[in-house]
Length: 157
Image 1 (tube, rainbow, N blue to C red):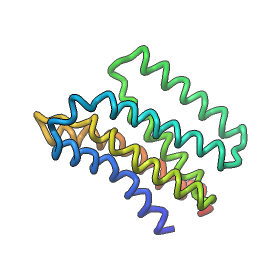
Image 2 (image 1 turned 60 degrees about the vertical axis):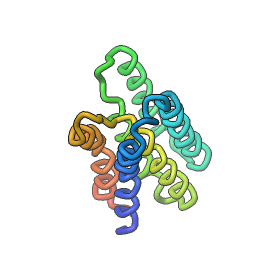
Image 3 (image 1 turned 180 degrees about the vertical axis):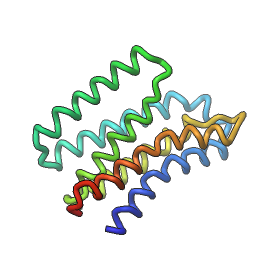
Image 4 (image 1 turned 180 degrees about the horizontal axis):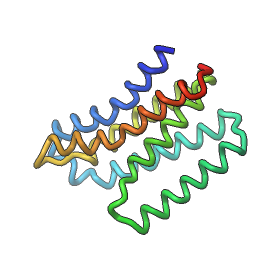
């Protein structure tokens, strides 16, 4: 069970690594922005594809998850100030927890979530204030609350 929590923190650290990479290569952020956005969408799509392919999901789980995703896309389109990363990381925390029983799926999902943090952390950087960048990343701490909290709620790890 301790391995589960360590991997959870390692997955979340991808955001900080993306932030560090952004500060190392400041001049590459502006021209590469569209590629970072594309990479975020691609990795998130792969997380969802592998979840459906390798996990035997129950429709009781799938339908609310799809409803959350639809609400998310609606909110992002309507409200430009909406923090989409907060909601995505909550969903990723639930996916992280649900994939734990299947070792192959857990390794793939954990790796993809870690890789998702690179472009996300890079895009959240604010070169005027390093602390504001860290604060933006800490808004996604819901991942840790969900991924580390669900085992205590269901205690079947």
